[in-house]
Image (cartoon, rainbow, N blue to C red):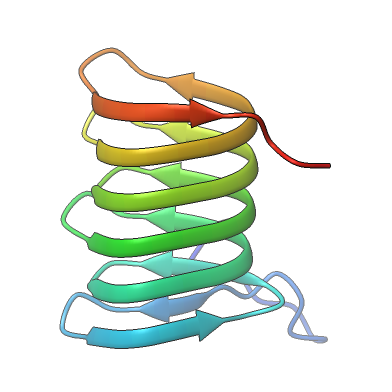
Amino acid sequence: MFERAKQDGAGEGVASLIDEHMRITGTVVSSGDIILAGGVEGEIKCRSLLIEDNASLTGNITADEAIIAGNVSGEVKSAVLRIKSSGNFEGVIRSNGIEVEEGAVVSAKFRKARK
């Protein structure tokens, strides 16, 4: 799902990249996947979100699936949330399923996900 080089003829499966040199303030919306390697202050709404090791987000996430390997401070609303060992999360989690790898730093309030 999150392969930078992945591409087919219809453009399906291609993730949008916010690279390590980009800093965005505001709302980022995509009907597909987003890879965050830079920084965002605001909100990200997408199908699937990958926050890479050195990336940071201060704001909210709304996604079907979110994978956090970098730093996030805010609220996550997702069906599935995965926090990798390099991840650092502080905020509110509204998720149907959560997976936290050993070594991750998590300071969170858990809220019931709305259907």
